[in-house]
Length: 196
Image (cartoon, rainbow, N blue to C red; front, side, top):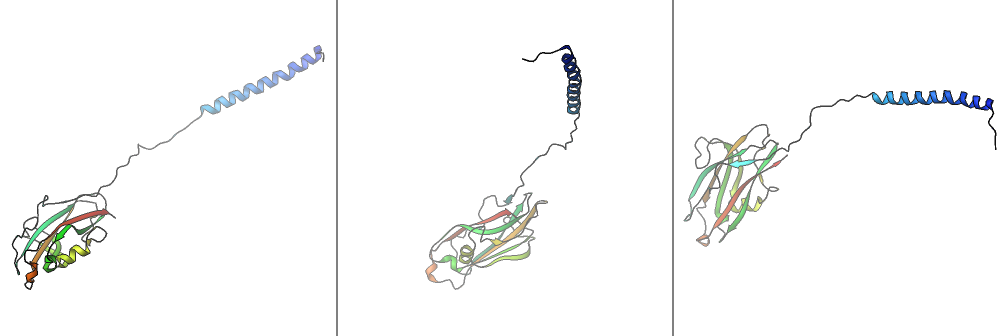
């Protein structure tokens, strides 16, 4: 077992003292460094989803009711559709809840125009800008049955409310055959917007 002399004790003390000073310096240095800090931030961030919204001035009321149409009869009415969404979108028109008998829809001529002026129940002041569809009711319901196949109308920007008026005209063909007597035809017209 090694013996510690007075000289070795002095040497150990001489070594231990500087080591303790160095260790204390490291602790002070570490503590001082940890006290330095800085941050920067911006204001609270937030998110809100945009909207796609459509409404019409018919308030769910029907555009046409013709219970006893005969060859040559017809009618015209208007409806205004308004986009109030905040996103740019595409609006398309299609048929839904289609039903009919005796082939009547094949002999009903249908014209749908898009423009401005007028509104539900009155086309006074209507100015046409484009023709959305011109053909038979059967042709319209067959070709346009969903948004994917809908007839293109207009593309609201989402920057502000935008309206378009649609003038819808129908006529039972003069040469409609006797086979359509008592026949029926009905459809809902749907304007749908999807963001672009």
